[in-house]
Structure formats: C-alpha cells, structure tokens
Length: 542
Image (cartoon, rainbow, N blue to C red):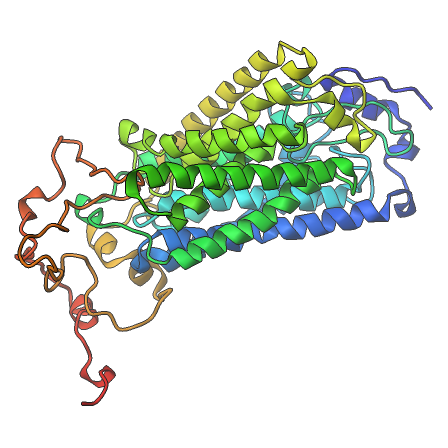
C-alpha cells in the first residue's frame, strides 16, 4: 500500500488515486466508523432546520402583506435544489474525473455510482452520505438567496432562476473549492465548513481545505445583491414607516438557524472528534459576540436594546464562523465575533451607496460576514487546531504559523468568487426576466396589495385589520397636546441606524405629506376597502 505524504493542498486528488481501488471504491460498509456516519446524518438533519429558520426570519422581517410569500419561496427553493442536486448538481460539483479545474462532468448524473465508496471529500464516510450533507449546504444557499425577492419579486420566475443559478453559479463555485481538481482546492485556500479528510485506514497527512465561505456565504450574499439590483428598488411609498411585522418570528428563525449552524460547522469535521467540538465552540462564541456588538452599536443611536439588532449580529457571527471555526483557537473566535458584528452592522449602509434595494441585507450579513471569516483565517488559522482530527497533522495555518503567503491566497480567492458570482448572477437574472411569462418583478399594484394576496392567495396572519397601510385612515393620536413632539419624518426600509433615508433625488420621500393630520388621498381597491373596514360583529356588545 503506497505511502501518501501530501504536504500541499493540491495533492489530495493524487493521493486518492494512489490508493488501490479495492480500498477506495469497493469497501464494505463495516470499514466506515458508524459513529462518524451517525454524526454526519445528524448534522445534515440539523442543517435542514436552517430552511424553516430562514423562512421564519425573512417572514418576520417583511411586512405582513408579503410575509407568507417569503416562507413559500424558501420551501420551494429547497424542493427545487433537492431535484437539481439529484439530477446533475452533485455531479457538476464533485465529479472526480473532471480535470478542467472549473466545473465537474456528468459522471454521477442522477447520482449514478454514488453508494458506499469513500466520498471525494472524505474517505472517512461513504459518498452517499457526503452527497446528502452537501445537498443541505446547497439548499441553505438557495434559501438565503431567495431573500432577494422580498416584497416585489414573483415567485415562479424566482424558482426557475434558482435552478439555473445552482447549475451555472453554485456548482462551479463548489467545484473550485471542493472538487479534487478545482483550482482553489489545489491552490490551498483556507476555509473550514465541510473540510475533507485523509485516508480512513492509515490516516495519512492529507490536506484538503473546503470553502464554505465561498460557495455558500459569498455566493448567496453577492448573488442576492445582484438579483436585487436587476429586480429594482421598491416604490418609495412602500418604504414609509417600514418595520418588521413580527419580531417574535425573527427570534424564532434566528434560533433555528443557530441550532442548524452547529450541525453545519460541527459536521464539517466529518467525524465525532475534537476538531468538531472546537468548531462548535467557535461557532457559539462568534455568534454570541456578534449579537452583543451589533446590539450595542444600535443602542448608541436608538437608545433601545433591539431584538432585530441582536438577531442580525448573531447571524453575522455565525456567517463569519462558517469558514473559520475549524481552524481557530477559541480566543480567536472572539475577534471573529466582534469584527463581524461591527463591520456587518456598518455594511448595511453599502446598499444605499450602491442604490440597490437589498431589503433583507443579504450582502451585509452573508457576503461581508463570509469575507471576514475567510480573511481572518489568513491571520489566525492554526495547524494545531487542524491536527485535532488526527488526520491533518503537521500542517501550517496562517500568520500565526508564519505562513505569510496565506493572506494573498485568501484575498485573491475572495475577489474571484465575488466577481464571478455578481456578473453571472446579474446576467442570468436579466436573461430570465426577458423570457415571456417569467418577468421577475410584480406590478406596482401588486406590490401595494402585497405578494401574499397576489402570488400565494393565503396570508401568514389572517385577521381583520382596521387599515392596511400607515397612511390609511385617521392620523396617529398626538399625545403631546398639539406640540407634535413625537412626530418625526418616516424612516425607510432597512435603515437600522435611526437616520432618515433620502431618495435618490436628494429629498425625503413624500415630504409633501408633512402634515400627518391630513392623510393623502388614497384610491383603494375593493379588497382593500373590505380589509380596511372594521366589522361590527367583531366588536364586543355594549
């Protein structure tokens, strides 16, 4: 049996091929550690819970009239990606016979020959389980991206788009990082989520560093920004007094995401070992400090301990932990959490500078958070932590191990991933938009009435409402006896820093309605009149 001494990141494929086929491709199931197999099955199931977590998070952050459409979009994207991954997604992302460095081939079309052989990512587990675990990564990425349709996008074109996006954008990104012949894989970019391992029999030094921050976080964050750009900005009058319709759902969604992220990062050790525990601890620390820092930054302006702010910071910390949790000492994750919470908080302003209506801050949370985690690996990644799985021993991390070149490797990979994702996503979205019947955006009237009524026909909260919009009906009661001290200009969507957003023309939206005691003339549809009428029978008898 040949000795494998793969000291560089690009030799994993050669090492795999060096092992005799009867060891690598015709092994009995008993040769796999059943504890490791059970651990990955559990971790993949935990990752699945991130789908309803994202659905509840997005629904809570949106207006109630478009809340259910985002839940539907997340679940629909999950179904589409499961089919796409079975059909050809897994093969395009993980074919071992492809040698072009950019995308796989169709060797495993329809999951053909994906059974009990060692996976391309880790010979420690069978390929069938590996394909399931990676499928959940793809499903989460698609669900994150669906946040780009918030409050004005049509759901049918979005699910058609997501099938194409997974094929043309996600699969190449995954192959770059995870395919044994991917260019980023060979180059040695440091990241953790889903990191492959060495030989299951002799446990030789075999270094393969998977990129979760690239395909998952940068892919969904930058892709969401590009989709929002093509979709266009919401109407100015729909930005008046925007606020999350259900903060409890935001908290519930964040909790499910946090729970799922433990499986996301912990399972990426591909075994029940000390490195998995380090990844889990780092995930918890980064999330906690990210939430606290974001909340403190919001408090300095609003003088309120916002729940939305705490949840946003928690997610920013979790995102930054995705590429870094399996490389860093525990103290380093405190730095990851503090920096991700602070930088991602200020990154919510980027959409205003770019004039892109990224309604749910996909870029600020996921793209920026993933970039932070990838860059910090260049400084704090430790060979000692890598070796805790008893496989990747004797390897160098980042600057902490005097591996100075790692910084430019990380930076170049980030630039390549961001550029490819934005350009191809924008081009693909524009192409779908030109297909008859698949226009990405709904009509202004549909946007006013809400995506739930127009697209879904059901509602997240079905109850009698006195008025639908902030400007309908009577003005708010002035408790200051005519002084109007509490009347402030409307704050537009997504501005978590308490400042009034100005329109692109340089003035406040709807400034001509300064007098709140004189509501604007509103022409209502019949359905709106019905919803804006208080039903007498619903009032208690006198």
